[in-house]
Image 1 (cartoon, rainbow, N blue to C red):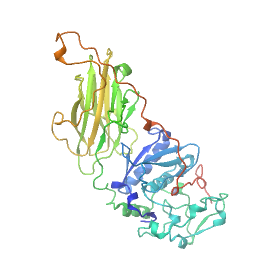
Image 2: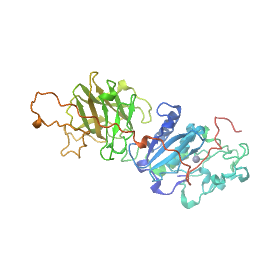
Image 3: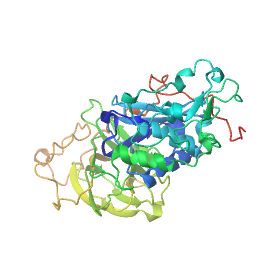
Image 4: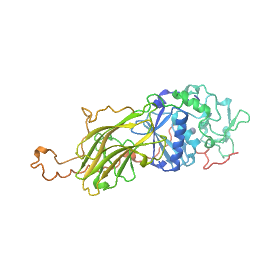
Length: 446
Ligand SMILES: [Zn+2]
């Protein structure tokens, strides 16, 4: 491919780019989020690259709307350092520009930095905004894999004639081929034919099918984060953890009253060849009154779909049995289409004490084992929420005596630190910073 990273360690396993959007992007409601999803879908339609929402993976791209800057930038490829930032500033919200920035994350440098670029473009060094000359540096052939593709003016990774111009009107790039106009990235429709071939070569794609092995199973132990699960509507579900090894999520009657609590997963990818998958989880219901924990599955047309129809979600499983004990279940799911999982907790209007808790949610791209009850032996079941009472029947003097008082609630901790936005850092070497050449709104340079 053209002008891609030459180090295979910087490729994403299974061509699967893990991403997280910072709250600043405004997903799922904002127009920015819509553009971002369209750009990701563009890669899904044309290649084996798959963008998957973060559910706890170590390496991921954190996409943020940089409100103080027009800057659009991203590291090239997978840095392997955990979180890597992708900045989309005020001037970046065009499909072409977002596809360009995602192209960096996929593994591409700028077309104009190719080792052979001098045969295709002339650089007017005098017209470059002082301090931005390095954006026009030519990469040496050893650090770049051009994937057997010719220089391409139409590449989404190719800057236009006025990139980093000192005054916006003096050209910095001129095609050596007569009659060629490059034009701004924001006006490009997306990946060029050559870009698509490069992505295919870089990741050994078979058409636009996902790579073998994708998607991978997801396991959420809620010890260090909530795995991308979020409250839909009221913040009824909360996260409990104190030692990073005892986490679970729960809702209580005291907090929720009779308001149903919707706990929404990220959007999961479909399996390319299987239709039967499995969700396994531990759950605990504890109340003197009626209560319900329900699991439903909403199918999506695309994994990048931003909304779903709650009425069309399919109820898969529910429990109303208050045992106060952790219980393991597995529930078959249909993985032939992208989907979202929804756990719903409901307490009765008259409830005074009650807890519904979940732990170790697993989304498996294979059929359930068929065992109806808990696996034996259970995989170290999580501790129940803190309790000071005993429910042992042997110590009870009268079996029909007054009910045991409900145990205290698990403590309501602060939201996990991972949910708090971190201040953006300056781009590191190898990243880009390309605010000057991008217009605040579409206009014609010529
Ligand atoms: Zn760029």
